[in-house]
Length: 411
Ligand SMILES: Cc1cc2nc3c(=O)[nH]c(=O)nc-3n(C[C@H](O)[C@H](O)[C@H](O)COP(=O)(O)OP(=O)(O)OC[C@H]3O[C@@H](n4cnc5c(N)ncnc54)[C@H](O)[C@@H]3O)c2cc1C
Image 1 (cartoon, rainbow, N blue to C red):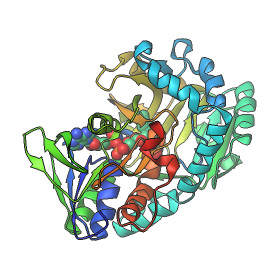
Image 2 (cartoon, protein in one colour):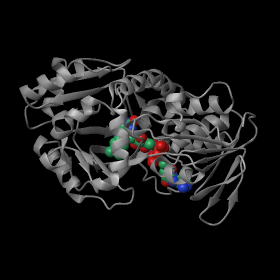
Image 3 (cartoon, rainbow, N blue to C red):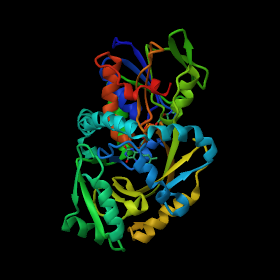
Image 4 (cartoon, rainbow, N blue to C red):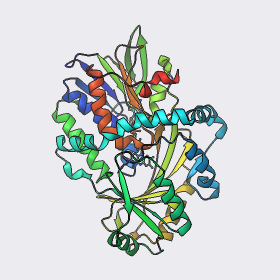
């Protein structure tokens, strides 16, 4: 799989799959992108739009574990584990990944990846002729009490945020935020070196157009399974069609597990689900994304509406949504006095999360034509552009895979 101009099948047309498909097509592969999502309902288009370069520390950490009781859903927080016994094998792996030495190794690996995440987005939006989609205005974090300000500030001061920076909200910034809310804000910080995608459906559209223009073929099909023949793999669609390619790249988000595990590769992904409400009509000012940290809620003004997102719900991929979470989101918006009008559109979807909170990016050593890019957890949008560049380099043999992101780390 080192000769561009050969055929490639990319499975999954979320933001990671689309970035990879475009990078491969431009690198000389004849790419077919297979995506089951005809309505753009995937997490790639339902997320908070934040290019989160500051989130360098893997969430598999003792600090995250210590904060879990405070974040528990039953006590008003955003963290929930549904059917906990079924999550136990994943939780055991997660606990092992939280040890200080594994955490430090994960942080080193993420530093390398995140350092180039925003530059990769800058390159990508230029090449799809959509520079306006990348808004490089940072993001804000705010707190509602003196105690939470003190605690939150101390936590950020003790966190490695890579190439991002933060300082206290300036007077004008604070006044602009306060004017849009009906409750007092006790403290806040403004991050620099982070960014926002202005509109996710438009991003999907522009990536699709650039891919088609470069000669790529997109098909709305579901790959039912991957099947092995000696050291090669081919795809079978749910219509019974067999697809052979010189390269098969799995980018199916949380559903990647069901594709690769029958091949003998272990991919212990969990569905870490989040919820959002989006209002088409609102009077929220043109501010960067604002995190209301006491409520674990992020508010993003997109071109298409105002989106409030929250929750970390470990659940089965197809477990029905917990409607109380949308009610909780609505309560937050009402209590904060956020100026929204009419009925919001509810959405939920799953972050694809591996137990060590590092993505799986690499080429299989067991199969000559298999590669993968999934498991991007909270950072799939942030890491999509750099994942595309990296996978093109890997598949052309220009760079070697990094052990920290190799699926073989799970045995
Ligand atoms: C509430 C919430 C907020 C978030 N906010 C942010 C944020 O601000 N910044 C950030 O960086 N990340 C954020 N994330 C995380 C981010 O959304 C995910 O990491 C990202 O969507 C993963 O992208 P993906 O392309 O790997 O997978 P997905 O978005 O899940 O896309 C996978 C695609 O593959 C398709 N597919 C699956 N199986 C098959 C198959 N067998 N055959 C064909 N197609 C298939 C699916 O239909 C889908 O289109 C957030 C997530 C949530 C839930």
